[in-house]
Length: 339
Image (tube, rainbow, N blue to C red; front, side, top):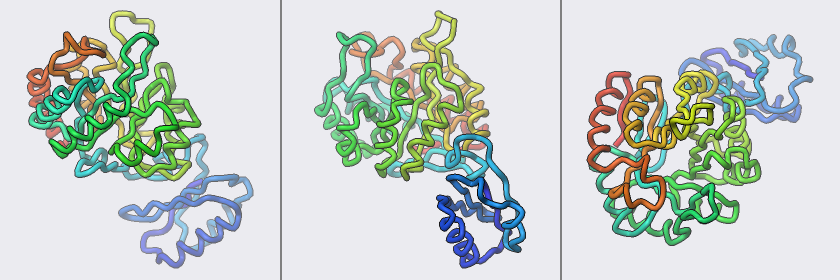
């Protein structure tokens, strides 16, 4: 349920109403907008008499929300959420590019790539220390030593780091060391993991599952937000379809659709969407034009010899050319590129 307060309502009147709803066993989320304050009621609202509370002179209107997601719902929070990591901002007109290798392989590799992508305009550094792989015989990442190398790259460049969390047992380690915690597509509905990261203070980048609907994706964000962490970034990374030509199929329509459904920022991973480096550029530009709040791009200094996903990784030179086009298009659509 959403309760919209009249413009100019004093805080003490809002506090009284919040206390009244809390006595009914409801959780109340408060959003202070430009023109009014919105109260989002979560819980069993069937006992709330809309006609009765509408008599309150300070209430503009009351609406029941039919969607199962509440905190992530744009009806609860009409203004865009802006997620911050260091000096970088994502959402609300701020556009950020996250770039780096699929996996951390060595100190020289991750620091060199970090310096290259930063020079080209990336605001955050990505790199996998722990890698979920389809085959148990594939490279699984360096683990905690890889995380330490990401921190060295951060020290060398000042870039916030983004890396994937796969297990609840590393939650505190990521809370202490990582700037944005990534939840991969395969773990999008690992609800125990989602609840644990919801208890952390760091922003969470939540990738869409391989075959999940928009509502299922947003409901996973709701799991995180229900535990108190409202700094969630949604990442469209392509879904499985009947088309075998590409690794996945980028669902460009997800960008405007989900941004209409939710206030959370939406970014796009064109690297995993196609699985081929030469398709990254057109898909990235399509994502910007469709209203995305950022990009997640794989960049490797030696793609033919990468231990993971070299076929979809851009070279630093190709990434620099792409960023020239992204910069121009971001400006054209009225957003600001964060560097």
